[in-house]
Length: 465
Image 1 (cartoon, helix red, strand yellow):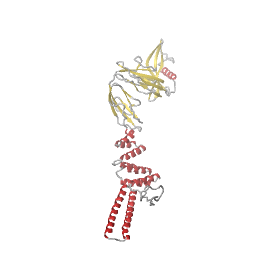
Image 2 (cartoon, rainbow, N blue to C red; image 1 turned 60 degrees about the horizontal axis):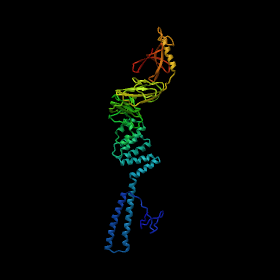
Image 3 (cartoon, one colour; image 1 turned 135 degrees about the vertical axis):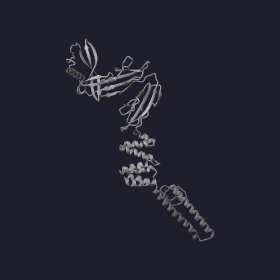
Image 4 (cartoon, helix red, strand yellow; image 1 turned 180 degrees about the horizontal axis):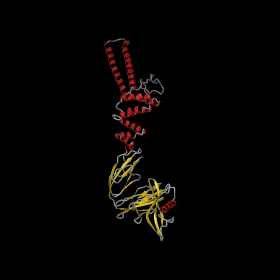
């Protein structure tokens, strides 16, 4: 620090200058405008008094004592003006927004929310076009438990020209905490601040952008939605509008040759469904796309049908022994019931020109919750058929014929989450085994026996007999 009289550097902790002996004067800080105003006023007064003193000297020689009076008067005037401006400056500072906000924050720190509320109320009244101060008051009202008042303050701040984003953010946070998701979505649609729309995008129920936008492609594509989300995506490929009952997106959507319309809808974590979006694709390629399998690899506890989408102009073949399928393998023609236990499927699509797709692999583990074994289920069928007169005894003997009926397990099926073992009837005669396409189902928990009527496409109707 510098001495105000001689300009020498003041030693730390000293109250007097070591050079001239002048006392160190501590001058309070002022706001720049007030300090400038004081300086200008003092300069004008000093100039006026000096000129007056000069005139007196030139017209009337007085005694030394008389000539010192104007200087003393000047000092008194300066001190008075300085004190006045100091008072005005401090008063203005204490009534300013910065000082009052500091007071409010200090009140909050000691949990005097009522005082803080009063201070922010005064600040808001003076800054009634700035949403920021509405929200500061609203935050304190929340601390006082006056949630309705706080909510209404935020609503009032939404349309203000300054800092309305604070009002939106306050409302979104409050409505999310209150689980008032409908109102939250309503205000979010009105919000023009992109960073807030992005932060709360789940509530907008907007479909995440796909990895491929609508257009024409020269090869099969796999569409995914890379954005992280907590809800569900549902889609259709048949032109219909998707609902919660449509195909759920769980892995990439494969699109092969031809024209395709993909309709997609997003359901947020709070079970609200957004508007559907449509994407159109044209695929022109000599290579077929890999087969699309309806179920993912994994563990299952109910009988499940494995369905494969067959691209136009192709045939699908599959194996269950971990080998690569060829045209000599089993051909997929209808849904395949998932086998009990562990199973492995490899699917391939082959075009009319003989071009092969990539292989689609699926690995399943099916463990039914059962009350009877397969052997017990077969016995149940035999007992039922003896009771109805279809066969004569447990060996499957038939009246007036040399052969016998036998019942071979095929696969499990599920109907409204009730599982059944499916058995097919065979006729054995002279060591020749003839499948008869007659099917029976046995409830895996209680052993109830039913006859199955097939539609020839892998679907059955269960009938009591």
